[in-house]
Image (cartoon, rainbow, N blue to C red; front, side, top):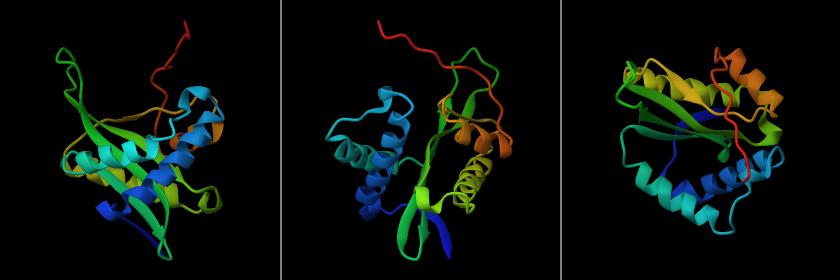
Length: 155
């Protein structure tokens, strides 16, 4: 049975392992996503701090006692000159390869959207690699639309 719930502090190391897998997956699209050796411990420290903020949510997907995915979401502010003051941001969403296409990612996103609705957030944003066609299709099936293309130059 799939359970979506808030991550517990004692699980952050396991979540950091999932996050490391997520970064490795993204690094296959672009080496900008390669992480440092100590990145996992840095992730744990940051999540301990961020979990204290009521405008942040770190949700996990648990199946048969095993963590198989996570979603990190938070509320952010637009610059003061925009009419829209606050927006929701889905920073990370990852499901282990062997558990994909079973509704786990959708369930994690639904949890995130509920989190934002409870806080009266009307717009949710996220970033996805332009080379990750599967992820783009996933987000589009959930009603997300492309807004910008984030470009870079290695000078």
